[in-house]
Amino acid sequence: GGTKIAQEMETISGKQNTGGSRILVFVRLRPMTKKEKEGGSRSCVRILNRRDVYLTELATEHDYLRLKRVRGRHFTFDASFPDSTTQKEVYSTTTAELVEAVLRGRNGSVFCYGATGAGKTYTMLGTVENPGVMVLAIKDLFNKIKQRSFDGNHVVHLSYLEVYNETVKDLLSPGRPLVLREDKQGIMAAGLTQYRAYSTDEVMALLQLGNQNRTTEPTRANETSSRSHAILQVVVEYRVKDASNNVVNRVGKLSLIDLAGSERALATDQRTLRALEGANINKSLLALSSCINALVEGKKHIPYRNSKLTQLLKDSLGGPCNTVMIANISPSNLSFGETQNTLHWADRAKEIRTKACDANEEILQLPESETDKAKLLLELQKEN
Ligand code: ADP
Ligand code: MG
Image (cartoon, rainbow, N blue to C red; front, top):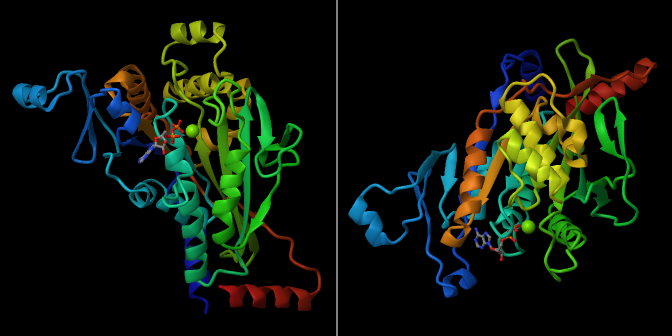
């Protein structure tokens, strides 16, 4: 019936959310690996109340109980996930709402960052038994489309790309590096595969395959590079009638980003940043931290142009977008420095404000002939 259209119209006319909002920041602690346990690692992170993260070099239970208060730092985030948290819980807390918004023509992005080995790829891609955010998001997307009988109207396209050493690679169809072009919708990678997805079944295999195409470091055979960034983009497009009876095309874009290892690359002050620039460190990650610093400080000029990654993510960072960051950390005291760095940076990311996130829509030129026009409107009514 017409109720769906009425609901959609409400969303179109009800653009009250113009103040922008802050980035949501989450922390996920992974379990200690077998290797860490065997190496005698102790845990230096505690998560309490699903929000508070305590980082300390004093790590035994005895120390903790004796001192009651741990020495070290305390951070608090929108939610902090202890090592027992399931993939589904992580998905539903961090990303489910973004998927909902993308179905209504808004942009959303989820970044995973942290040191190499901290659990970024596990969180984003996961395994066949325990699929991660990328897969669960697509599953949820298709479920929601079905539940609302939106199918036939919503069209879903996927693209999966890598930024490695300032080259952009299509992970769904490896070949020559892609060139970035600017069009009216922003920066895009020319020739990037836009895979039309019809169901979830095919997607997990597709993403696993894509992940195998990620660049591996020559010195670390079989291991995906710690310097490779992977970006999955899910574009959902549909048509709807607005309040003035125009047919509008709505496009929602969800970007899910598995960043390169953040070790030594996340400078929070200019001096460290300059020192790092001298070293051969991931340029895209440095540029990302510069952009985030500039956004946090409310600077007018945000240096998006400094790297491929920041060009690609321009509309996901400072643009009209719902943004989520997941900081991945290891519990091991051997990773204390990295964990401290990651948490410090995550704490800072809480300051970033994004612009108001309205639906991306374009009024469609209706067919000239009255019969074609009537046919199209009828179709839309049926679909909704
Ligand atoms: P990164 O992508 O940050 O370098 P990975 O996601 O590859 O790190 O994780 C490193 C190792 O830890 C992998 O073997 C992965 O399966 C495991 N791991 C990471 N997070 C978890 C988790 N939450 N539960 C179980 N195993 C995990
Ligand atoms: Mg990884």
